[in-house]
Length: 122
Image (tube, rainbow, N blue to C red; front, side, top):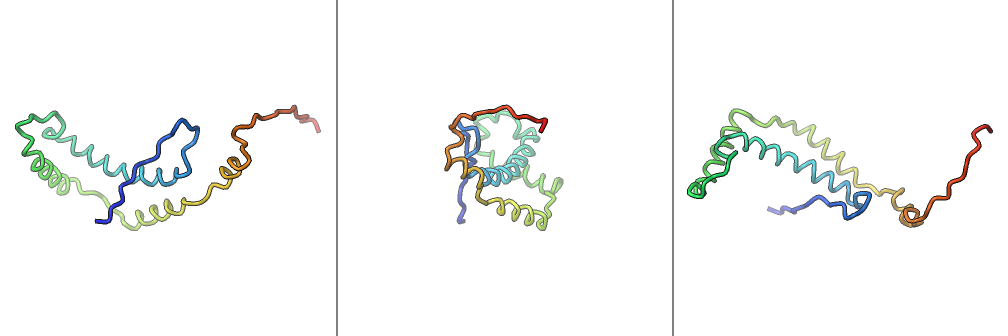
């Protein structure tokens, strides 16, 4: 199916997200749709509690029944035109962060700042 699995980047004891922060935002915005559907599935009593082991062979059928009910009575409200605009905006965020590059090149993040008093009366 040509699917490429992705996972959001984590803070690795850093103060900022890594350079792929925009990609992480893209993955997270897609992931919330999956979590929203999972939340809808959990609203059904058959799937909200612990399922006994004897019912394991029937879990697939339960999920199919609940998903069919959700599709009929709670259809997703899709607006593909808006989705395409939002997706294009997110893809356009894949630009270089010149400020971060300058800070890293000059090693400004590791240098101590030398503060001086300013005379505001002039």
